[in-house]
Length: 350
Image (cartoon, rainbow, N blue to C red; front, side, top):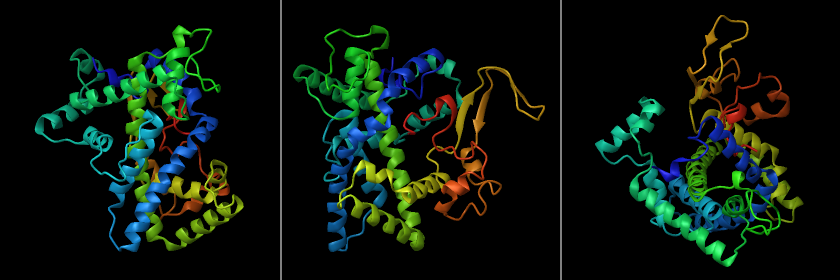
């Protein structure tokens, strides 16, 4: 049994629906606003390191630096732990976060190949283990220690782990800051310890790798397109001036050109270039004779759609104005899919 495998990405049918219903209240804009200060605090650490590199004219491996930055953010938000990856590249959370994606031997290459080509039902029959043993042991211990400490001391912290603890101990998310409820918990809605661990684990993995990669590509495009960079700097300075020089959640929401830049980055460099889906009922594609039968697996070519000139003229050009309200309305739906779409759209898309 792989205790870290029971997360939204791997669950199906009723199990997926039940878990999605439980977790949806933890991903509202209000909850993200609650956690914003944690992100802002980590950003100060990144700024200090970048300033020091600039003053001393030292080059920076920006992808590695952003990977450490997002590890600190997600580690703090998901686990309530100060990972210290920015200052220490070999910090444990950074080490084991990298290890999840490393393929170090021929045996591990076979494991990855099996995951890609073998049917899920066969993988289950084989009791296929998705997570490396040492990685599983590290994260399970980190999560259990955090849960036990917070429950014992009734710790309240504005992070994702607090919301998971509420789901575990009371079966619902509330705004009162309490982990438990004097009225008891709703058993059918409560998370088990393994379910809590799996959600924290996937939140960490999906958050630090995809976010750091997207930021890396965004910075590359800003460097390659000075006119875009200047327009974005102007918007940032204007919003900061309005908010007394402070970076706030409300201020971020006012940065519409920033959002366009990120949307265009995700168009050119989607974190997941293809999506796999399965038909749950027979379906004929409108205006065609193409019939999809229930149970058929479908591959959606996200990168292909994102670079189709029919939807995005000159797709190789980085142009954030594609995502102005006026231009977005000229395209059909489902032509921008970095988070997927439909019922199984990424829960982090707010």
